[in-house]
Amino acid sequence: MLSRFKAYFLVIVSITIIFTTTQACADMFGFFNKQDFVLSASVKGQLLDDGQPVANTKVTRTLTYGDEYIDEATTDSDGYFSFPKKAIKTSKPSNMFDNESLIQHIYLENGTPEGIVLWYVTVSLHEESSTLTELLTSLVCDISKEPQTYDLPIKEAPEHVFTIYTTCKI
Image 1 (cartoon, rainbow, N blue to C red):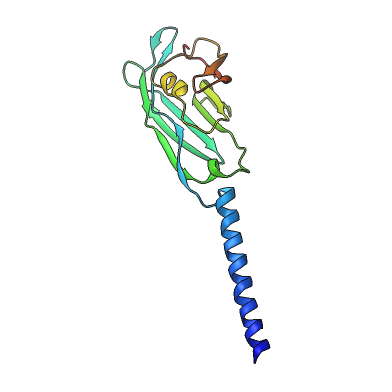
Image 2: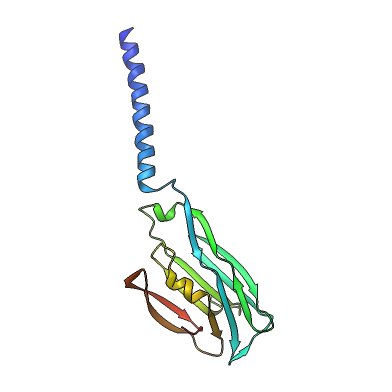
């Protein structure tokens, strides 16, 4: 009788240890801790061609962070377009094994995979940045200009930069 009790007790203790250890590891490595994660601040911009507004043109925003999120806007008669802030619930930023970068790509479709690039940046710091937020609220993009690459210091982490490839004024 006593050995049956010991066996039962050992099984219960083992299951308890396995469950709590598994849960502790999952919590420690961030597997189940979902949080709000901002893929993009709201975007407000104007599309120009040699300084003249481009009306009724589809602008596409692709945000890639593991999954791909795509939305579209159409320019108004003065070439203005906008996208709302985009946030998701994810456990990736709290997962110590996550090393994925966020890619923000705003473009016009022209039959090529990259399209006519208005804005392209890879974000490896997983925090909402006032640097990007400020830039994205006033894009003036002239498609007659060749895209340029800019290395802009990140206000929240001045030792790092955002490398932005864009036809917009910076």
